[in-house]
Image 1: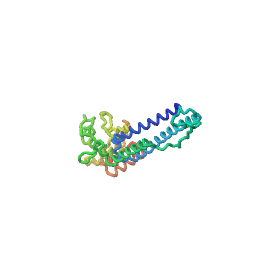
Image 2: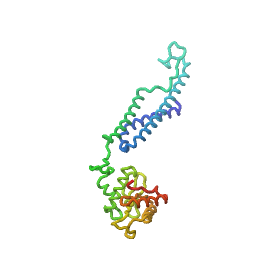
Image 3: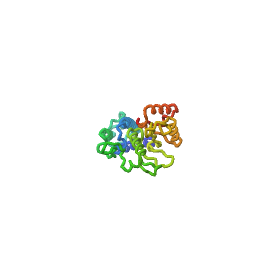
Image 4: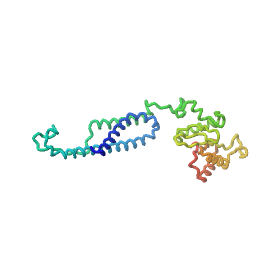
Length: 285
């Protein structure tokens, strides 16, 4: 066989081996596909990969068929039976061959290979639909149904610790953790951790994207005060704080739960006019 044919055959065998390994690895991959929204992507990827693999296998089979058929054609004029016992007729003046029809129908091993792969994919899909079934995965909710992302109590505490306040867990830190976990559960943020930088750090880091987020919990009338001099909300003060975070390289989550609708509307307008909405997440969304 020439080198090109050997290369093609090697690629085909490699694909078969990888596919068999992939079939046994599907359940492990399921740990990372806990969200049912991944099913669509899984089906599309599976279909494309399977077709590509079949195309490569069929091409290699075609190449092998061509090579063998051409070799046999060159042997048609061989008269010695001793070279090809059982192929050439003892009485025939030459060996007669004909090229097989292409593509070669799948044999039992090929059929078994694809059926196992389909079974593996179907098994994965079933476990995803059933909430992963027996596949090991962390419990994303506590016994009260509250989302934790599979974190231990120590990890949850770390999410609320403020490194700027000696790592203490305070009311604002608890708010920031609550906001972050809710956005993570909704899929708006990826996996979050606490920023441990004490000076000029953020509150949360999305380790999926690497984006740092500072949570701003603006309040319309803190302690009932309506005067800006006593801390009542103003758009200018809020925008100054937002831009201050931008200068540190942080994006901003705006917690609006303590803002009256009028102030929310004013702040939204200012953010849209400044063209910075792409660095803002509103909470609740």
